[in-house]
Image 1 (cartoon, one colour):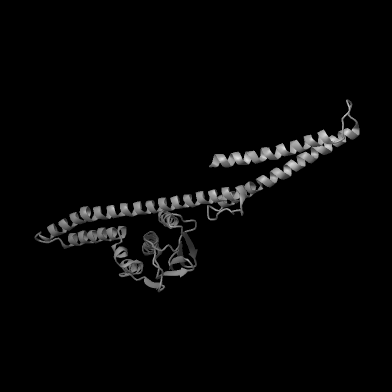
Image 2: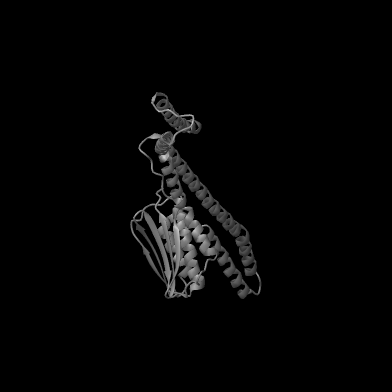
Length: 312
């Protein structure tokens, strides 16, 4: 198909030039104009004017034939600079429309392929997290449980050591829960976020404010998982590093986008900070076409996730 279109374009240019040359030949053959063996100035002027007319007519006709391609190239350059967010304009008819439709179809296939690749990457990350969580539960968790039972049979009992082993077991179980959020699978995003704040701040002095709007749209699994993971990372950072008195989490819909905000009044993120946690949140957001912003404010940090709503 592409070869035929290229040949057709070449044929148009050749035909245009051929018609002009034929017209020029006919004018020379049937006009009273002659050229002396020693051309006069007037004859040279006539030849120059005729040649210039042919060149100008050729340029205008070829330009008209190829102008749709020039516009298409300009549109493609714009699309490339906009990271594929837009499609090229489609002329009403002609070769330009055929090429524009083909380019738009190619762009749609590229975006679809990127989407499938990103979802596969997200699924792979979650599968690896689930595997590690299962190994922690079956390996380290069971070993600590067996050690705790063995310590309980000692006489006299070593209460201090038992408490340390129990604390380690609780920590392993907590890490396993973070790696594989069963509450998200079982109860949904709203309950998962509530359980997350309870786990992190339920036994501390940090006050939690929740602002999850009612009537939020049902999300596809990938988007829901990304929102939860970003909230988990942001809240964990607050619990570990912020030394905040208050942390707030809100989830609302703005048009066809869902916006998650986690804000605290702690010590604030350092200037230019871009650690593993922040990079991980940005990468997860990008997997579902979202955007993440981390901003330092007076007395704290604000993390904002903006993702398009994709219904299941």
